[in-house]
Amino acid sequence: MTNLWLTMSDDEHDKLSREEKEIKDKADRENEAAEEAALPYTWRQELGEVDIVVLVPKGTRGKDLSVIIQKKKLSVGLKGKDKIMEGELCKEIKVEDSTWTLEDQQSILIHLEKVNRQQWWENVLTHHPKIDTRKIQPENSKLSDLDGETRGMVEKMMFDNQQKQMGKPTSDELKKVEALKKFQAAHPELDFSNAKIS
Image 1 (tube, rainbow, N blue to C red):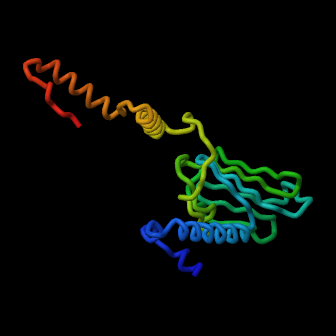
Image 2: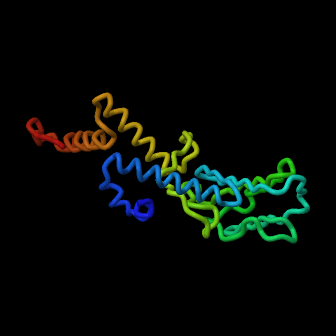
Image 3: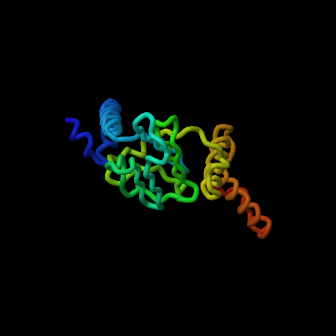
């Protein structure tokens, strides 16, 4: 039954009852957790960045490591040994703003700055298991973190929601009223007393 859940389309998911959705979502989370646990690293992301932790043998020194960070590729390993992780990145990164450090001679911390700071990654390397980015619950962000267009859209939605809660007109309704007033001012000869505007 689990395999059936994993191959379900969005439309099929939408048709499930609330209880079935909860069961499916729980199965999906358990499957994702198992796949993530099998990876040779852990990772977390925010909209603009990805942070990866790769464990290495205690006592490892920086000169023992081979870490290559490129726009669309990442390679991490110990010199003279098989790579711990290597492959094509899920999305492009800003190489000049991405870094790695060795912490306590036992873990490599890799910080990648995303080129597209408005998109969640499904995985770090394209050949690794994907997560369902629709289920990511981002931390609260500040409006200043958003690009101009997105920020404007969010501010409009917040204003409209606030207006609705107070029983006042939304921004679109205010624009219609303003346009009507301008039209009435330009055409005083017309009688709008019985007009219904929607």
